[in-house]
Length: 475
Image 1: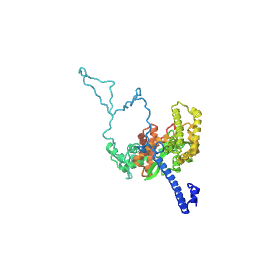
Image 2: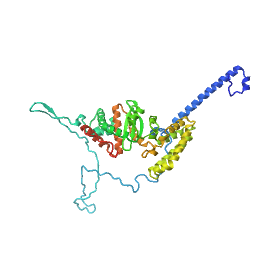
Image 3: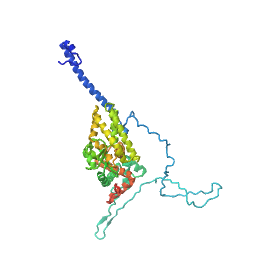
Image 4: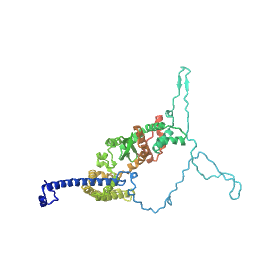
């Protein structure tokens, strides 16, 4: 029978054997309970850390922050009043070509009441813009059947391309625009046509028009996706739902073109569906799907790293100090980056004078963090040490940013659409979404009309002529 360490040897020897058995059993029980208590305390600490997760220390969106979340620090006052600032360029209303001109002439002098005649060579124009009572334009294509006087065979005129759907390219384009760019959904598109355009349309017809638009956009989307695979890209993904099952929405943002893809999963194969084995530089977050990428050809997003460092602080354990120091260095990097963008610091000066010291200190901090008593902090630091080259790719390659903000911005419209649509019900719907998102993002970036692009693409698809491209001439 083993003596418990807490009982002195003389006292143990003087105790009867029965008492020794009881004390030994109690000591074993205490040891077991201490182990359980340690496990429970660790579990409580982990759960409390999860409760403290918000958009500042994790990948959670700001919309998920609870009321108790610490608000963002207020921006310092600029000293300017609200509204337009003195000296700013004017932004008058655009004068449009008139459909109707009505002249208003004074009949008499407002001072002496003398009758007035003549014309003003430069009258004041008060523009009033309105919608016509009826927006629809209905055309009946009457196809005649005529009998040949020679062979008596009847021949019917061929149908026009628009007859297949019963709606013109503009109606089809507006339906797609409202559903995707306006995020109205099919049930929102139907009352618009009924109330505003006086065009009765069924829900099934809206779905059919969306499918026709998706088919017309297929070559446009394919070309945009192929273009992104040949260029450095910011890549990001978010959750999606297809047929009530989890799926993934991916985006690749390059200098000139953006492309979206919806996949059934958020794995390596899904990433390959987006990038197609591209060997260009990828800017990403720390998601494990990207671990196969060469760190020398990958830029890890520092905005995500800053949230990881904040999470180390908010866990309030042995890793908090390392997290605070790493976050301070991340903020220094952001300050230098802001100066480079404002051209108060040249890129070469940053690389020569600031980067070596910053990189060395971050490496030392990660090395210390890898030995931290906090398992989560140690795991993050070890992972970053393994891809250390990927932290500084932006410094070696001009045009690469240290953050993945471009891809995150590109996903915002899709995330808002997901909230109201709850995803898609089929692969057909997913193809429509990814193609429309690609059109919306590129037309906005290129300052092109989304609706005009859709009308031109649909008209080209119906007549069998080449569709317009989303790839600019400079790309």
